[in-house]
Image 1 (cartoon, rainbow, N blue to C red):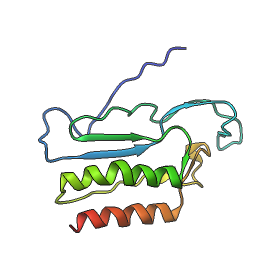
Image 2 (image 1 turned 135 degrees about the vertical axis):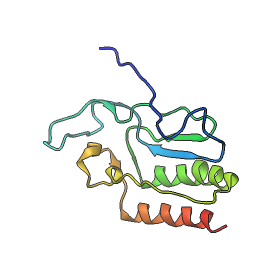
Image 3 (image 1 turned 60 degrees about the vertical axis):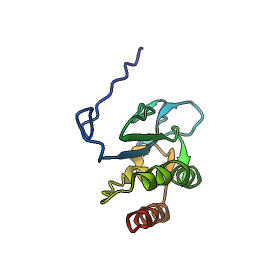
Image 4 (image 1 turned 90 degrees about the horizontal axis):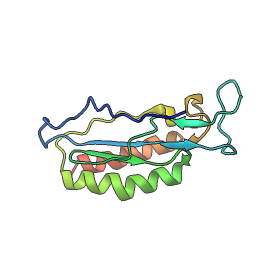
Length: 134
């Protein structure tokens, strides 16, 4: 079967001004057999992990795809090396956080592939707060 990738970005388009920056860290990519992905029912999952796209970054959109399987270490490295420097250069007046809790290790929606914990959400919020307070 052929998978057609499309892009839907309701949060930003070419007509927006340059004073909006959208940053997304997310799982993306093909899930392979042997990765241990499971549906909530316990049956094995192989296929495209949501969102499956989102590798492109341009203008006021910074996408940080972390692969189909990641944990605390990979997430924190991505935040430190990609998200925070870009946000610091942007010098925001306000930061709005939409923390997807489907990345939590106890959420079955991520098929057992993403393993963030409460400490990761606290840590990233604290790091974003430090940028906001500058």
